[in-house]
Length: 425
Image (cartoon, rainbow, N blue to C red):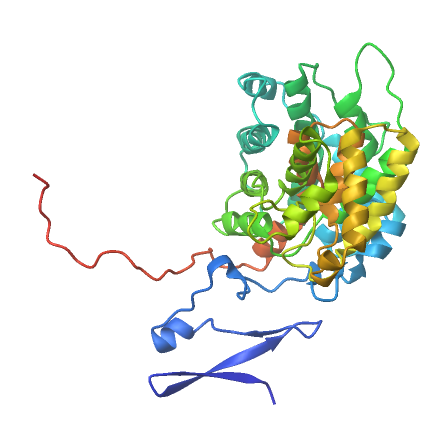
């Protein structure tokens, strides 16, 4: 017998079905709530509301579990590369060797960006934030690819995926090149996806660029760890915008804008800004740990704890090792990174932080890696966007294929009741 939930309003009872997910998550289906009762639910921040059913990512914050399409994030980080995981997220299964090779080949075919896009990026001041530039450039891709994607045409949808994966990586790195005043680079079809990112970012025409396998492997892992994270702010935005049948580029551009906020993708930037503040004030980590414990002090220890994970962030365990390898390989001598190490060690040993599960999260370690690579702080969220791209595409694709209705939340009006119109004297 299927489970139901009973809601009583003014003495009248209403019955609603309870649905169960493949990992035994339960949800009360209130799809007909307003039709039956005239009432709606109110749930600021949607902390208790499911906007959809999805077969892409499973997350259990209490147990510290993250899985893509049923595969543990730990297994994927150890055994797959970023393009394999991207294919898995978007198309539902890990690719065969032939499918992966074809996927990479097809991404390369679509990596060239129309030269007129350079005119758009030239219109931005050098001081423009890279995320603002990235959102605009992503949206501008719509002008050069005006035909809407027919999601029921498998070939057309596949080409749109490859086109988005190829062009987004290029324009994301162009935001950095613009801020540095460097010439814009192009995709190199002899290199892999992550190697291309490094080349697009850092190669200069005056000298050959040497890639470090330790660095590229660490970045590959970082991109995998950021690839999807269930119905977060930016992903929900991509699905919401896409539900109006807006195109893929327009929907991804909206996701970029949502990711920009300091409470979402900007968190790793906030970590480095905090570390720089501590350094500028003498580098006394004990003082700032005490401030973090003082409930009357507005200071927050950025990069510790997580809104969803009530345990250790499973992604942080993976990237902590990679961060240590990168720092060891590069031999970076940076006082900011030394402060980060002291904060990490203290928080892992301090009973105050342990009792509250305030462990270093993925934003803490990703910021350290980006800093060690010489990536400017305001580019950190762009790095996040590159990793999150396949998740956004997968979520958009799933939403369109499931023929989900246009997103249209309700509200409870709390403004003035009807008033007689009188012009102010």
